Length: 136
Image 1: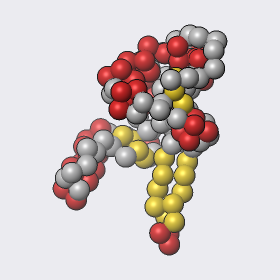
Image 2: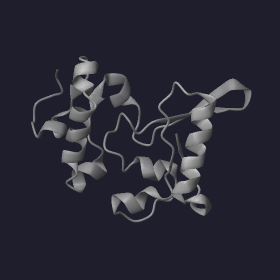
Image 3: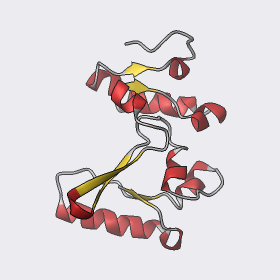
Image 4: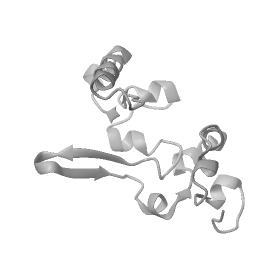
C-alpha cells in the first residue's frame, strides 16, 4: 500500500498501518510505504506527490495504483500510462534509465522470478540494452 503525507513520514507510522492491515487480512503480504519519505531511501530530491514518486519507480508497468472511492468506484493513478501493463512489457521508467539504475530493475525481475512466473511478459529493448522490439 502506498500513500503520501509529509506530516506523517516517520517509518513507525507505516509499520503501524502495516500491522493493522495484517490483522485485518493476514493472508496478504502487506507492505506500506509513505511516498513522502521514500526519496531519502532513493537518494533523490523529495517528491511532490504520490504520482511524482511513482515516476521514479523501476518499471513503468508497476507504477500503477488503484484505490476504492465513494460508491464502490475505483480510481486509477498511472503517471506513466497503462500501455506497458496491459501489453505485458517490462520497461524501465525514464528516471531509471537517466540515472543508470537499470541494474536495480534487472535484479527485481530476476529475484521476483517474473519471467518464470509470467512467461508472456516481454522485456522492452531498453531493459536489455538491445535495439530490437520487445519479445519473449
